[in-house]
Length: 176
Length: 164
Image (cartoon, rainbow over all chains, first blue to last red; front, side, top):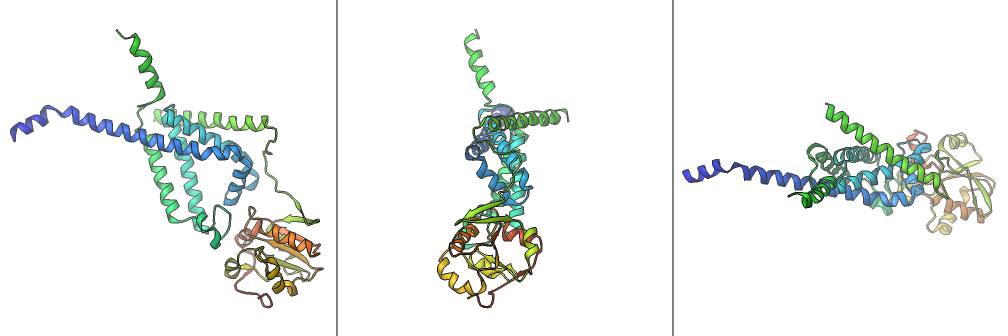
């Protein structure tokens, strides 16, 4: 018993380190997940901004006149923020942007849910389009994404960033 | 506090630079999207010019005896609520459905067709069919039923007499 206590007292460092490493990997996973999701979701919007503009108009939140400008710029913010998160370039500012965008999407989904709007076709409760209708599951999913993204803003310490990986590789051959 | 400020500034720089990429690429594109969206003002359906109007313009014709509103949405949605006095005529089985609706659609009347919203093309499909039958005075309320309902304009439920 005493030996066990002694051992614990004697070696607090490895425990802290392992916790630290698990946080690091969790944040890395969050970064790759949110970043990958943003890159994936933005590609089709970049390919067809006119269609994305139509989807924006469908929400009836923004004035229709603004829909093109938003459709032309927002997907580029998404892809850049997403790519930065994946690569670990400016991870925290990028995560702040993804958190902001996800919060706006969450607000739009809550609004669409409150008005019973089908975001895919703009139809109200038509049986053929029930797949696109906003439900509680959409809201929970979006809320989870906001929290995961915000976790990167709070806890990312620049681990596994492109810069640090690059520096360590460059530094190692020159070190004695 | 300072680090939060620095974080926000860096995020803003990324936001602006990424947006500028989108702006630049649209300017360089062979088919650029106009910066300010303007909805098309009319369509050609079966050789008939059909003006596209919004719910405010459509409202001016509401109550006019020479105007009939035509609901092209699904039946369940029509029954749950529609523009007051609207005739039900969806694009699916339109010929069969037209038989039931024909008595309410005089050839000389002004028809205002609508479906769910701007992205829905069901009103266009019905307009194309009616154009082939010789209807010449048609309009499409492209903002759709959701805009009419949102504006608090008159609505009704259930079937309209003579439209069964």
